Length: 292
Image (cartoon, rainbow, N blue to C red; front, side, top):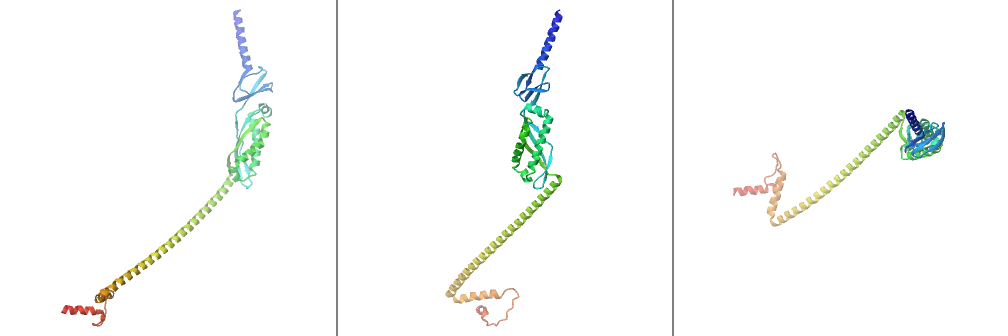
């Protein structure tokens, strides 16, 4: 009898444990839950903590309340400047209404597919209205905000909120890339030619200015030299004039020496003059003095 009683107690404890496990459940801080009864939603649990349900009749569907990432497929867009680019965008979203989310999309895979089909057409429509320069400039953030506003309403009807949309990468198709790179190379070559031409022009101006300054310096130096020579000649003539006044005979002798120096240049100088020429006047006097 005691054995039967113990068995009953054990069975009761096991059943109670199973019932308790089927009744109570925990909602984590990163989760939100819907209690379902035969597949129909009965209530939404948004707050974390311990919750309950009717065992064996009700079950729980949990959803992430954190910000989730979405990476839609890459697509090609024709811009207003007739350039084609491959756009690789990404989005971040949250599940804000678990009940709507369950009723409209149910699973995460379906949610990603539906949200991607909302975002990609809006991206394509907005980007197709701008040029490549605008896509690559600071205006891109404004384009992303516009796209986000366009999909907000449709996303909310699915129980989701689009937190952010960004273009992760924009690539040119291969043929367009070659064309763009070719134009860039041509432009850089043109700029290099202009820079070289400008450098040559500046160099020519510098050389012309240097030649001009050199000519001015040489002219000033020649002018100063002539002034100094003139002053020297004047001083020399002044000295010679004073010497002539003091001793005319010595002055005449000195002038004769200058004439000899100018006339008798080199070892092969030949002069034909009369012995009593005035040019040799002092030579004659020298010979007479030696005889005496």
